[in-house]
Length: 135
Image (cartoon, rainbow, N blue to C red; front, side):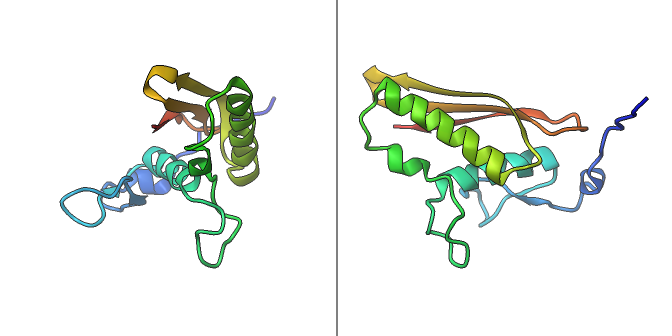
């Protein structure tokens, strides 16, 4: 019988040790630190998808490139392609994440695309959802 113990990230147990910083950067200081792995993973996803490939020096392949779709026509075919693209990029670049659901929704009256990514981290109690709005 296999036992899958729950993993605990050591830094989550050290309340004064920051793991990363929150996005967007708009607090009273330059960086607002975060202290939980759950928030660090969410911020890593935000950073990845809002970075265009070629934008990061030394790592030209990094980035989800979602901003390239901002001025695209909102059609069902484009939304399906975007959904598949997001799924593939998460599978390729975030091997520690299990995708539960990816939704790409449109609000035609507001010319907005909403991307919802539901994910979990195996062997932890981390289940979370990320929502990105493009208008």
